[in-house]
Image (tube, rainbow, N blue to C red; front, top):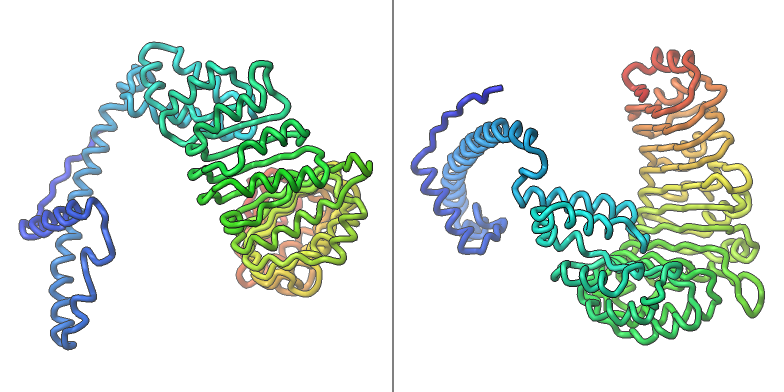
Length: 506
């Protein structure tokens, strides 16, 4: 397909102004401030007539400048399309080996990122093998791969000494991802040996996943690395499996000595939260709780007290709470007597596995005070006991006055009473429900919702006319979306006839 030619005319005076502008930008080392094109402070001291006259002259200069830039953009777009049409068939014929090195480098980095993102917390992950494989394909691939430091950034205790040194060398000065798993240590790579090597590069750490079982030897080794200077660290994932309470507190005290001025996300399992600055400035946090056994007492210790550390994170905006086997009476009793207020939180995700829904969920949500919560997601895995009830999320009247979005990933059967949201959440706009099996009874009244989406749900005994009427009564309602849902064809036809284009079936 040919590309039409594009003619353009540039006003000479406007080009002079454009050149002057580009010179100013160059003199500022490429920085463009709000005052570059039009500085209001220059007119502040003028009388009104002179001020408006000066502003009008500025306007007359800016419009031709804008027209020149648009004409230049049109010409540039034309040549880009022409070159793409000429180059694409050639590259399709020659394949990836003919790509310029900079494009091939982008392909390598994109491939690495996709694998690393999928397996990001696994110490024995395929992203490291990906880099070695790439550099072994051909001399050209090896040359390009060695010039891509970002595909050599993952250091794990699954590596031997030689491979670890190779990755440190090839990653040059870019940020490093450090992955440590208590399940993988090699005979030639103990926890202490690995820490000795990688802490020499601590100034380059950007993501750390530290997964240990908290035994005395590991904790003693970790104690040797207090006061680490980790300037680039943005994410820390620290997992302790089945520690006693003292071990959890000791591990926290070590982390608290690390200097992490740019940390934005902390994820911990069975560990207390560091509360000293800059940890107290965290914006995002994930807390996971698995069964915790105190070896001395032979019983579970009350891990809910870890939640109380969240009081110290006054800047926290996003929180994930992941509970496993959380039906123990100690936690429920604490939730019933202690409230947790998170003043600035706007996003909350709750994940429950092997929990007693009827006992734990109401206690959990009664214990939370979230005045500015905007998004709430609840994920219930398939092996929970008891039936889900929407009412268990909603203690009192209007418990989340700023809530706009609710996402329920249920993997459970039951009855979804959306009427609870209508009466208790007047600010709610969007509802997403996934993997639900059961009934959705209609309700009376007018709701404020903009959209409702059912994803991979099996909806039984659907009162299609009642459901359609319920949704259409909303003055702001725009879309009901059914994605991969099992619904009787006759019900879908009824919904279509009642809702028209506001029903979307995928």
